[in-house]
Image (cartoon, rainbow, N blue to C red; front, side, top):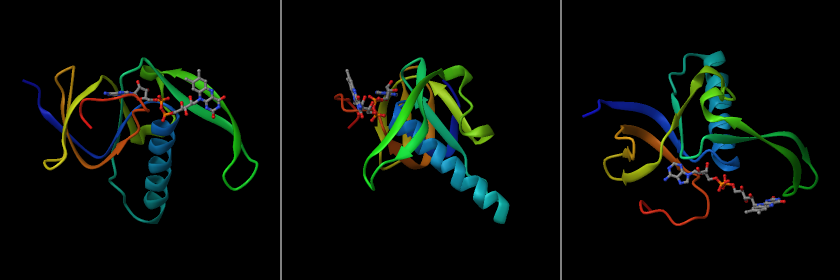
Length: 126
Ligand SMILES: Cc1cc2nc3c(=O)[nH]c(=O)nc-3n(C[C@H](O)[C@H](O)[C@H](O)COP(=O)(O)OP(=O)(O)OC[C@H]3O[C@@H](n4cnc5c(N)ncnc54)[C@H](O)[C@@H]3O)c2cc1C
């Protein structure tokens, strides 16, 4: 049985939505670091071996942007700085009341806030 680890934010999904979410949270946390002391921790869980980062964002209209997508090996991803930890594993169950995520790899992860960015495919846990 593995030990339970805890994070402030758990982001599920290493696609464009999940990576952008984790990076934005890391950015907010580092701003809070400058202002005082922030102990926000962020875990990005992705079933795929690669995560998708976006770069060269050009805002065309308020709701339309152009950008490039770069695939990065999940194990080497450092986009959110030291703040974002990455776990390559698939979420198989979520206890929404207890704030606990369980993965196929046998990990039990506690969270304060959960961001579900696992794409449009059907998932058992939702
Ligand atoms: C062929 C094709 C062409 C497209 N072309 C364009 C285009 O030209 N322009 C455009 O704007 N959009 C395009 N799209 C749409 C675009 O790809 C999607 O809108 C976008 O990728 C959605 O991003 P996402 O992060 O929400 O989901 P996804 O990219 O689907 O990412 C989901 C992530 O969640 C992970 N995941 C899923 N289940 C679990 C689980 N149980 N545990 C842990 N991780 C999990 C997956 O491994 C993946 O990393 C295209 C889509 C397709 C299929």
